[in-house]
Length: 100
Image (cartoon, rainbow, N blue to C red; front, side, top):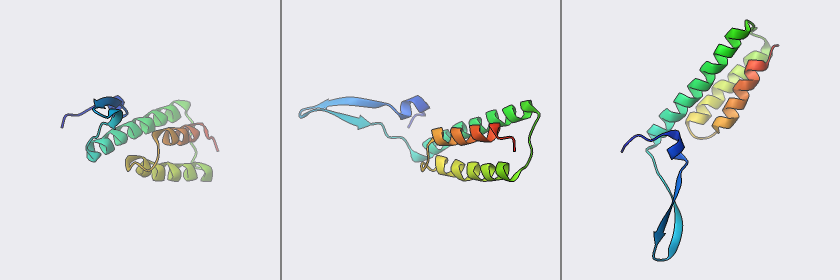
């Protein structure tokens, strides 16, 4: 099966039949979806690391460590399809702005 973009993952197409129109989802191999989610989650983390490094400030406080543990756990939930990228991105953003 050919590789598709993330945009294509969410595409629904209408398919006509004798009974009328119904929606059919496009299915993709689960491993490709996992790889795509990993790539996106990694890019979100890399961007956050660049922002933190550019700020010149990072302190391993208990609050930061808790967020990092949450990010790690949520990462695995995202790539397994149990959590959304939006929630992951929001948590990573919180990590980049937390100072103490």
